[in-house]
Image (cartoon, rainbow, N blue to C red):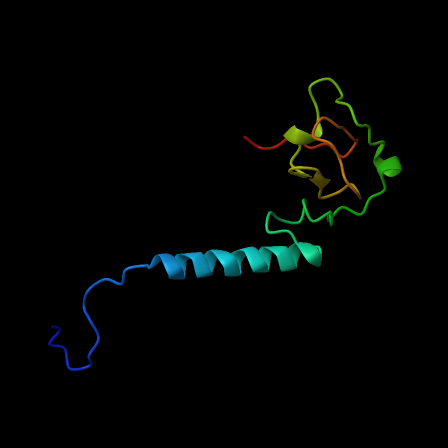
Length: 104
């Protein structure tokens, strides 16, 4: 028996299987609801809402690299397929005139 006056046990709380399963169900429900309204837990890139606003034509975007320069090595690239500068989806192997190499 616990002798504390407030009646609370000083023993660590054990997570029951029922509590764990309930938590998993709630988490799955929240993720499903988010997906239904277009919100992705993985971030803005997967939600299809890329922050870039510059039209691809304005920066001569191409879906292939320019030598060793490509989106995946650019400071503006947001994996898996967005850019902070270019509007719309981009590919990691793409390239545009706004290319700026990532700092090491």
